[in-house]
Image 1 (tube, rainbow, N blue to C red):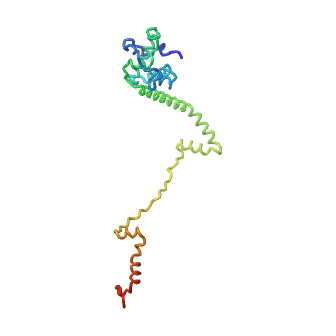
Image 2: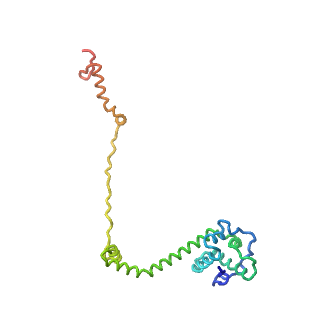
Image 3: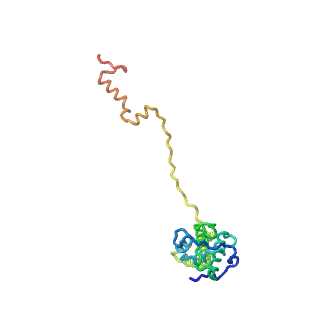
Length: 223
């Protein structure tokens, strides 16, 4: 892909030769994970494609574009111009440009801004395309609604025009009746734990009958 950015200066973002220092001799290579050069190669197929998108996005945002991003794009245009004029033997890498600006922003910030901007523009285009197709979609819905099988389309069109409305669905809630807690003493709680304790009185009476006879509530061993 030819370098179109270096041959098409944009108004308000022309290369400014006196603003930028010489490129640093040492910078991360293009295959260093996390660097701008690596992102451009991995996600956009190269720095030309990525910077073309970034340049276009910055131009569409105008004054609302972050100043440091505009400065980065402007600086890259400047170094591309120097290479085209023969002042630089090799093209500047994005990592060199970022270091020349003393790292005013991180690679992740720039990539996030670019991805978010592209997504926003794509959504705008999709909505515009849908708006243009609305008339045809409605015409197809009307055509289907006129058929015996088009009851859903008829319902949708009538609701859209406000002729009929669908009321809220009736929700039936199961109400549970809460039973009050029964206050029990220590003895009752123990009886609940051990069912045999409930028959303690009966067992005591049987034991008394075995040992002797009970008269007027008293145990008489011998009569």
